[in-house]
Length: 332
Ligand SMILES: CC(C)(COP(=O)(O)OP(=O)(O)OC[C@H]1O[C@@H](n2cnc3c(N)ncnc32)[C@H](O)[C@@H]1OP(=O)(O)O)[C@@H](O)C(=O)NCCC(=O)NCCS
Image (cartoon, rainbow, N blue to C red; front, side, top):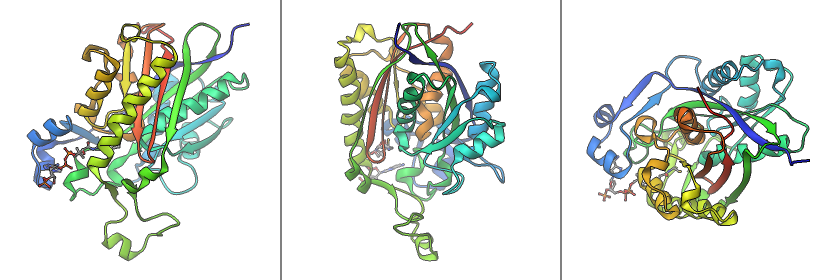
């Protein structure tokens, strides 16, 4: 009997309506559209507004969109994993809140924190449950409300990030489609270059930490950039080599959208032309865990059953990883 593989059988997304443009940002900090486009490649990002709305809201909307698109009932879902670094609150898990909001009551759920590699790590994890044969419908949510942790007075970080919620459905298949393999890496020393200092058990929130802005994202941009360029390209090439894949064998690179220059460097190392690379950073910025599924959602109609996809990401931790999968369906 053929081995069970996990196949992505649907993609859902939610994007907040508000568009924070480079023009508006340049009224908030000392920056310009020209600098942002040249150094990062972002024109605008979506920002979630509205009292009581947070990451679980975007995640739940994305799951509703996914279940409707795939004609799946809430009672069929066995498990839900939410990749996020902006949970609604430290506990309980945002996955638990999303499941409740959507009405998924027969599944267990938990959060996974791997920052910008969150989707890759969650997909790798969820795949194991499907491959085991015990789980038939696993939802992976990747959602981040980065606007809740970004300092809009810091020009070195506030230009980069946006908000979004996404969800994919994973189901078993014995056809030659679905997730073929994954390679994931971590180097915890990277924590020194990209983190939030306060609000955890090491430095609980106090009026002093708030005064110092230690509840916001701290990033040493150049150190992260250098590590990301090498990490993302290395792991993408590593998985290509493992399967002896040449650039002609690959239909799509689906890269994490942090900086257009990092995406270009990865595509170049893989020998890919730009027309094989999913890019939407200009419209949404870096939505952290959500970038890769947001690309799949946006490019869904261009994908065909059997297409070879390489997913690749790099993020805080440092974490980085790659998934090789064969797309599972055609969209009418
Ligand atoms: C953040 C990032 C865009 C900065 O670009 P960079 O080319 O490395 O720029 P630098 O940090 O070297 O700064 C160069 C100059 O631009 C300035 N600058 C920084 N942000 C600016 C902005 N928004 N507008 C105008 N100038 C800016 C800096 O102050 C610096 O000025 P100085 O030379 O007078 O000191 C880039 O480092 C990056 O993308 N890093 C990785 C981000 C990332 O992937 N993070 C998420 C994890 S996946």
